[in-house]
Image (cartoon, rainbow, N blue to C red; front, top):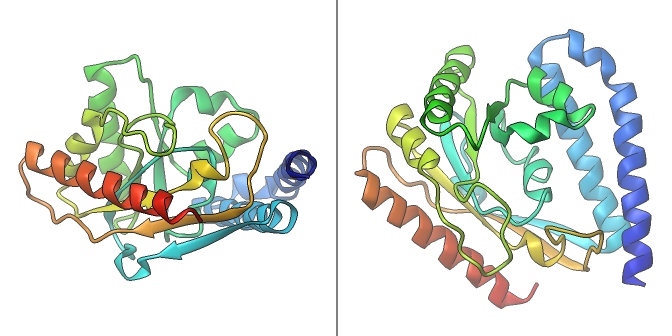
Length: 239
């Protein structure tokens, strides 16, 4: 039954994505906020399809910590749903995305229109300098935007701590903004690879913001400790 539901969801996901891309195509010639809004609609329907077809529900905790203005947001990363599942959890986020994602048909168009932050993971120091410059530009264009990054840089298995990359520390120092961590358990129900979607509850948990101004080492330890502890606690609940 899980396989049948997963196959049905996969079909519905791609069908809805194609329909949405065609229906929302005119927004690409309008203001950025229209494109950003269309992503929210697309993500909301995907979340609905996930619940109706696969019995995977989404719960949001710690909403009192969710940023309403400019902030750095750093989340655990276990599957692709961590991106579009959070479109409606933040007012106006610019996501740090790897360059390869921009080659995905249609998705790349919206990412460019929404002024996402694109990085070349093989670019070294040059990539980091560009990331900081682009992040400052996003906040100059829209001072209340949130800069969203996965500090581990890639998807990891639930319960496994990845290597936290220097990009998040550089953004924290350069932008001088509070950092809001997001713990999650999404990989249990939407594995990083394959089409299986397991019933249960995906939880996105906003944690208490880390204030700006901490030294690099202190910040990185605080971020990793909070994210790993809270994410592992969600796994222990067995939702």
